[in-house]
Length: 128
Image 1 (cartoon, rainbow, N blue to C red):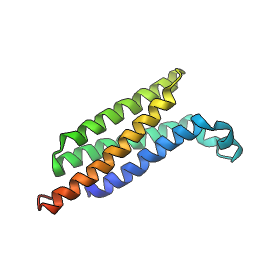
Image 2: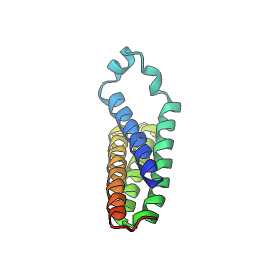
Image 3: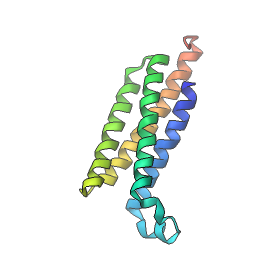
Image 4: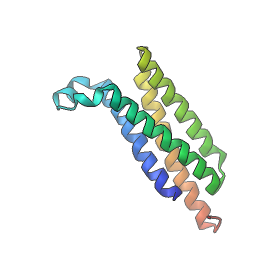
């Protein structure tokens, strides 16, 4: 089960990070492509909420599966940076999207690292 949570979580975090990057780097191109509606607050909060929820669930399950504190640390850093980016965007500070992208990227890396650690754990016969 932890594999699927991490896989879905990495997809959710990557989608969130790419969304932040696209709307920061090329907002006119995204709007011209007819995707301007994805810049709304509802989508922003949706991407953020799914990424955060998946990170929390994955961190809990990962720790139960392989107990690697580095994975918990990665999820903690990723959620803090993503949260700081989202709050910065919300209050209109510059650089919020860069923080959000960075936080999403850290979450993706944490999910991928968690998958690798879980596989190593299973190969050693230590899986649940």
